[in-house]
Length: 136
Image 1 (cartoon, rainbow, N blue to C red):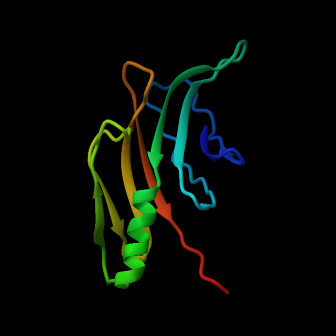
Image 2: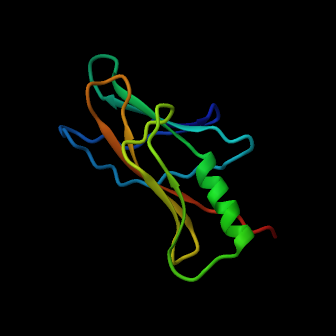
Image 3: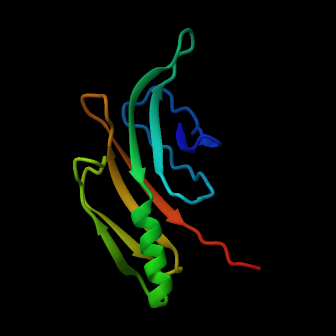
């Protein structure tokens, strides 16, 4: 389950009988100011009782949005360009450094590995793509 705000929540499909599930799903949210955290929760689905919480994680979206604004100020360049590096720290769930790129399609993309909190082990790999709307 993924929460951006109280009003923006999405669920992925259930992956049955798998220790290392791969969802490979695209979920879309609308960002509003002030930016907060993208909250993620992982559950083990049970048929006869309540689902077991397997862990949770979060991602601060501010570095991604700041990198997109920087790209807009400096002007979009051709090819893939690294805009910002985000390092793992105590106050985030990053497992390793994360590079925010301007890709060849002009999209701002961040690939992240997030640690699951509240469990002995577990990680999530996400690709976050910021799509800006063109004013009409």
